[in-house]
Length: 419
Image (cartoon, rainbow, N blue to C red; front, side, top):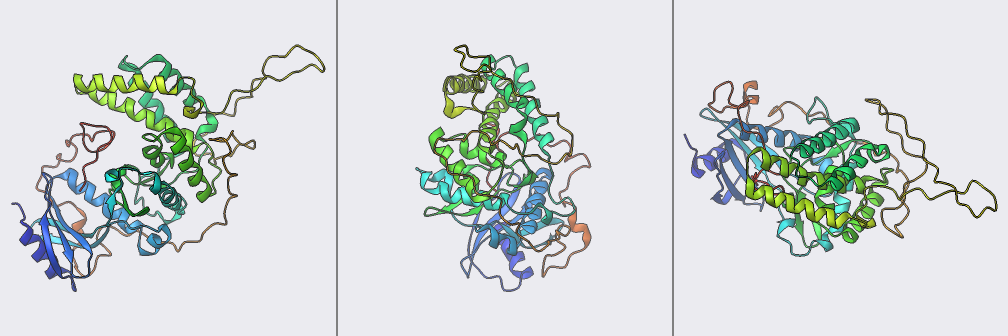
């Protein structure tokens, strides 16, 4: 049975003390019964009940991240994220009340350049959070080795389509073999950052939404959404600001972000081929062809360090010896500590500012993420509320269609479904 906006708002007012709703609008989707309301104190809340197992899973993941990024942590971030106000049952249907972050999506801004300094600071703040605040497997954790394996797998699948230019395959294979490129410390990441997920007010980033894919992993996964669409000279300044704010030794994060943004096109091609979508296959192949033209002999689009200069081994000799080949680094050892190369890689852009030294560690009060709804007040519900209350067979969730690899909308690689 569908839950009407009146039913949802009446339930929320009855269950959450002090909640006064001044107005509402129906924002339901095929997978959610949902109403968005404005409260008497100017906040925007959503009251939602999932109708499918997939929607329930997304709601669960976003709730866990809302608990992870508690009020104290949000103060350190400097921007807002959605967080749960209450949850419970309406009949046999689960209902969750969420206070939403407010702002203008960056995707609707004509010129994003004035917002880039604030966005660099926002992402640096997120990636600087200590991973010790993540408890009880609240979000997935991925190592640097996991990142290499995922990228290599994407390249292999793209190669199997026989539609990727050989020059790109060589470029990507070289990036996989570049061990220095993958020397990073995993951080707390948004996991599926798009311009639609970033909320702004004026020139400032004031919020981030759509946290269902948050994880501890490669920070370059967040930066790729910014580096990919922008001109190299613009994205280079953004990466420089980001590194300066973080004070990180991950100097190759910009190269890695560009590499991952290119792999998104390959993943889109694979998705279209798997679904026999010929019009979009042609579109993906065209994008890859344009990418080859853009990166060929273009230092600004490089994925690595400059070639080693020839070194003369003879004194006062007009003959220049062959370039000395660098000794390859030791092979990866799973779970080995990250080692930063003693010799810094060439700057990402010319005249880039010196990277700020590693800051003193910030001590954050340990936050223990409790089980779903265990901290929700004032609704007191039995522990069984952890389980989705969707009427579905035991195999419903396992049979749900796999999500598109680059955003929720399968038609394009960068479009998300906004809850």
